[in-house]
Image (cartoon, rainbow, N blue to C red):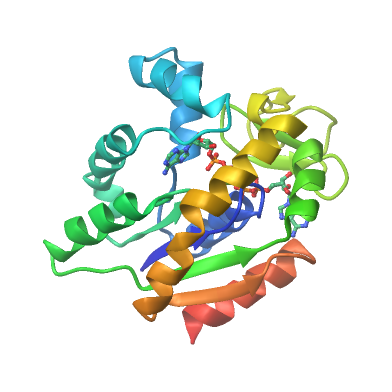
Length: 214
Ligand code: AP5
Ligand code: MG
């Protein structure tokens, strides 16, 4: 199964993608997580990506594509994957389609997690992220068992640099301009599904499951 989760920054793509990946035994591929991992390890790629990420801008398509095409070669992708944060521009979506078509393959579901901008600004301010395993928490809605510590790997939780309110506003503007056009792109292909991304995490997950089990 090949699924794309679309949605604004902070819509809950990562939260839902992790559950889909666990339940369907497919990898969760988040370009943002891969970039953050590279930043943590001070790689060349990380250094280049950080310049853009810290400003709330998108990393250039060529960098993203190089990284993701390489990731698809890993053996764990043989039964599919859930993509979170990729594609994010029309050229990225076209490159993905082209790569899949070469193998007579295609994306089955592009699921848009729909959340209003005001709700997002609130969520991001309360989000705490584990930079080791990529899990996210929220200081009100999804608390870790011990404050400030990841339940899974015991690392410290942090406020991401790009979750500061001014950067979030910039990320939202970039989303509307460069990523939102993907909704029409996938709608035309007949694989776009919308879910209301407000309300409980379980309710949203059930809505997603209903789509992929239909
Ligand atoms: P990325 O890491 O992908 O960030 P994003 O898309 O901005 O999305 P987030 O991870 O911020 O949000 P999310 O939708 O995963 O929400 P989450 O589940 O955490 O990318 C970061 C940067 O990398 C980009 O800005 C860009 O620079 C670069 N980049 C990455 N991919 C790229 C690409 N393809 N091309 C170019 N550049 C790229 O949830 C958010 C919070 O809300 C959490 O605290 C969570 O606990 C909480 N929450 C979730 N669901 C609910 C709910 N239902 N109710 C209440 N709270 C909830
Ligand atoms: Mg995420």
